Image (cartoon, rainbow, N blue to C red; front, side, top):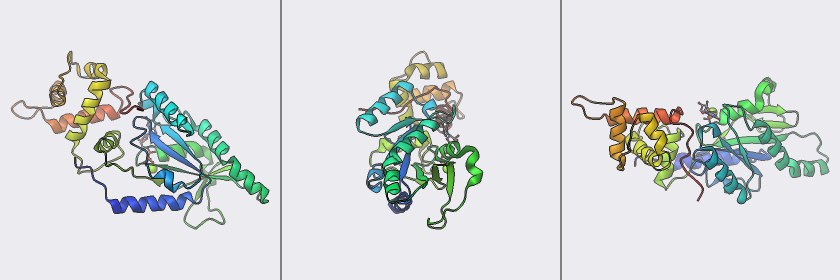
Length: 281
Ligand SMILES: Nc1nc2c(ncn2[C@@H]2O[C@H](COP(=O)(O)OP(=O)(O)O)[C@@H](O)[C@H]2O)c(=O)[nH]1
Ligand SMILES: [Mg+2]
């Protein structure tokens, strides 16, 4: 397994997010609906201090609907506020705004008691690379984007985007790196595109993906790659798919690098259908 993190970089990124969080009333944490656990940062809870947060499961159009529902239930059982979103059909934005307002309510009431009126709610987005932070920001801000500007009383360098009369959004989303002592977390992040690293060994990643899909979505695999039976060994299945897709090197052996690319591209571009890579326990 060659997915590596630089602990120094991770610690720096975490500190930066921690500083940004101090400026907002509510944090919107994005997680990929296909890997809701793997794409969350376990440290976030600590750096939130007592700030309220809402968990937005994004890219729900790419995930298995019933598994996403199970995750929502799981997180809600743990007392979390969950919103399901997808940019493809522009779903969830209104619900997200509503939940942010609800979570900010105690803070806003406290400010009013101190005589501070008409202070906008301040929110920020956090999440792993490529999860959809910019997309959600654009959805929230929409045509108000032009009305951005500095806000007095806030450390210079940060800009606020207007979501509505009552809500501002920090224009810099916080990038969080998940911890993964667990190699499966690394595979899941690589498959879903959170890690783009030239040192990634895509054959390992794709072998993991194939085994997952074989277990949970055998029919989709059979249909996509025109296979009547799925070999039980992951490597054999990998090879069979490569052969079906004509990924061959001279002499007729399967080119696993090329096959890995094809399979990963199929998964990421939804050619296999909506799929989730993990389920709540
Ligand atoms: N299918 C689908 N794709 C999405 C969704 N949200 C974001 N994306 C895509 O995911 C990729 C990364 O999104 P981006 O907002 O740049 O992520 P960021 O790195 O967290 O800012 C882009 O190609 C988006 O079009 C979604 O809800 N559904
Ligand atoms: Mg971005």
